[in-house]
Length: 169
Image (cartoon, rainbow, N blue to C red; front, side):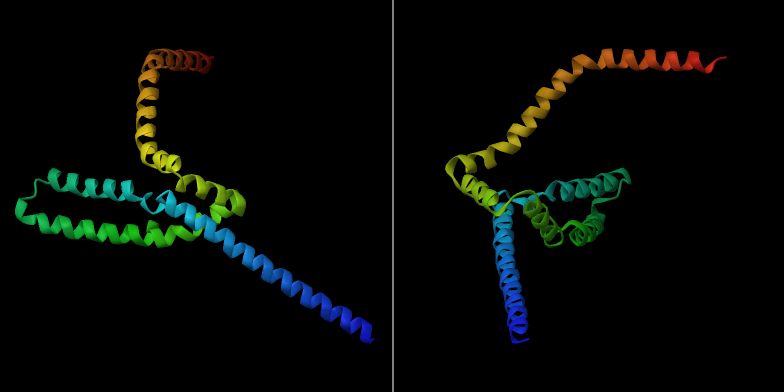
């Protein structure tokens, strides 16, 4: 009986130690994910959304031909919109979900390697150049896409005509 109790105690102790190790690993993993998000300025991901909402309010203000004396009203509503966005997509709201997303996608070691890269001179250059590269890549794709638009529109018209003829008995 004493042996069984000792064995049971050892099992419980082993599980406690292993869960403590998993917790330590988990916190290190989360810390690596959080560092990665800091390096890539993930806290600024929502900035375009805020700007777009601000622009919507400004455009509506202009459309209503409100006098300049009502500018304070516009600013008050823009502040309210910012507060609503903060509650929904503010950094403190999305950060835990992003940490979870990155820890599910990358191992702690992979995140550490990514962090090392983004802390390097080349990684920093990549971070500063990436928005411009993405914008220019979109322009290149858009320009190339223009040449396909007439053909796609023609195919769409042909499909529509074929479907219309099939409707008739």
